[in-house]
Amino acid sequence: MTAAHHTPPIVETPAPLAEQLRTWHSEADTAAFAQALAQLPALRNAYVTLHGDLGTGKTTLVRHLLRSLGVTGRIKSPTYAVVEPHEAEGLFIWHFDFYRFDDPREWEDAGFRDIFASQGLKLAEWPEKAAALTPAADLAIHIEAIDDTQRRVSLRAHTQAGVHMLQHWPA
Image (cartoon, rainbow, N blue to C red; front, side, top):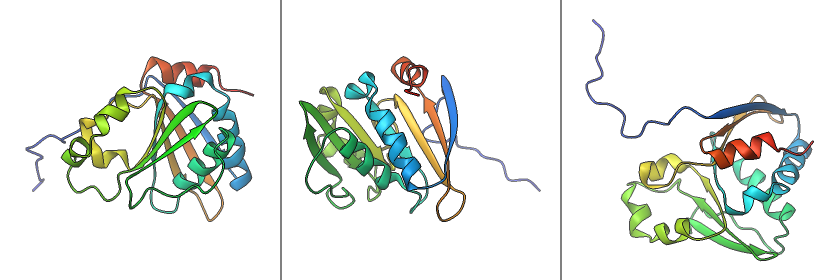
């Protein structure tokens, strides 16, 4: 007997408009990736989501990216605060971590709609916890651990801005 799925998933992820695959062999590769990402002008007003199991390097990538964008001082994980704001060279950056969300409505209740409507870079770890309340990610970065140091990385553009970023990735 086969079980039938009678209810569709709450949120269906649309197929990406473009996709690139990469491998990071070390944290130095993660840092180089972050530096290249920081060079993209479209990143200044992008929504970037980070996907992967615990310990795959999502927060490490964000820290390297924030440093590459010019953020100085301590960079805290937003695991408990849910969002940590940053500013660098006139760029507003919000780093979200929705891991502790139990209900997608918490996103709305927290007033994040205003942040997403404003100019600046939005980075979100565990975006699936906020479900369909967030806009489509310009760029979704999926990180999978191969071993202790290597990562398989899939970049998926879900908007034209994301496609533009992938097409103009620095060498």
